Image (cartoon, rainbow, N blue to C red):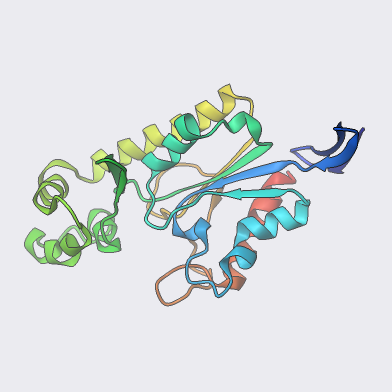
Length: 231
């Protein structure tokens, strides 16, 4: 038996099936991934107050949130294409983060996340001397400090990361389309030149001390995503 649960741009269903002569209800699932913004950092009760829970409650569907503090777009794509079968989900909400982040394999996946100052330097404060800037983010790297210092100081620049972000953006969109899974693609990188469905980081969004959305901020983000779904 199929029952329409929510009618919009995406159509959700509840399915009642029989297993060992017992009926149970199968709830549709939403896949969420991103960084600390999607994880719910700085919230008093992140598992109940973050926007992914708000959306899931409103749609009466199952929340699957695998976001990671300091996570990268590379991790998001690995999760999409390698770690999980996204065809098991009814739609995806992906929050891309700063393209300056990455990850590498050293017996386990290790995240590399330069300080926020790195993005300010790339996009806004280019007149800051490299040596002055270097001291602001060097301590963020737990391992292989010399390597990552050289990478960010001499290899990568704004053009490099803008191109990397576009590749990541197109990869996510194309892969979801190829699997026929609806996608809401968001970002917190307000310096980005790309056209996202929802830009989460706006000037008027209420934030905590370390820059993450407050409980009210998560409600605003949830409302934006819900408006997009209802289009």
